Length: 266
Image 1: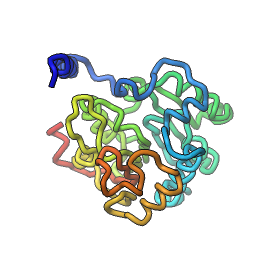
Image 2: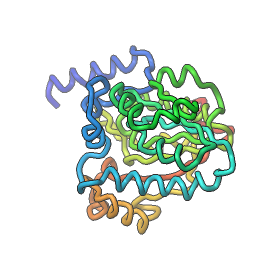
Image 3: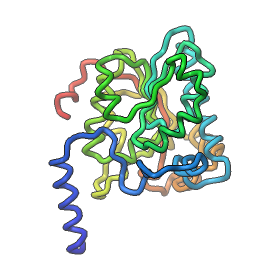
Image 4: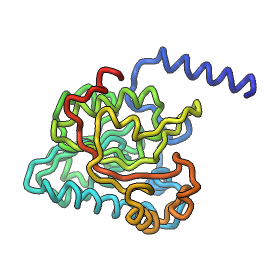
């Protein structure tokens, strides 16, 4: 390891210790939090690579999974949802249209994404107070314990510094009702800038337990179908046996653990 790299790693560790929590720091270069984006640029950033129209195909498949495994089961209830890392609101909009008893809070660190979400989501939903958009710090300041039935995190956790993720996960845990669920789509590993191996599922274990999941190891048939439908880019299903964990993906509904022993250790 070069002297410069050693210094950079030391500085990163130092600032991780002294900086206050912000609940939403993206990895450097992953998403521009202040630069203005067009809609097509936003879609490209959300899902890089793969075949044309991957954004539309994956949105449809992801929403279908959520409908079957959560929304339809609760369609007679008034459901309160948080979409953490909502982007332009690609799942918020169909949920608002199909489930009129649902209210949603969209959360994103990127000012540009929030601005695009205000254009993407029709004004009527804001007028009816069925949706609001917040930055992460605003979100955690406004909402307290056990208010959400579902929290969604779609391709979010892998882009957040490990230190911040260790604050976000227990905070999300606290915001879910006792029977609340986490809907997650993620790579297996966090893109940690210090090259530490951090498996997302290990970070979830103290707080959540799997209810249903599509992954290359636990539900291989559906996983192959999912990757084929969306025309996945790097770490696609054809290469999944050889790909690194950080390139593989999983999608699942996780239930909140009650009286979990892991809480005090984080």
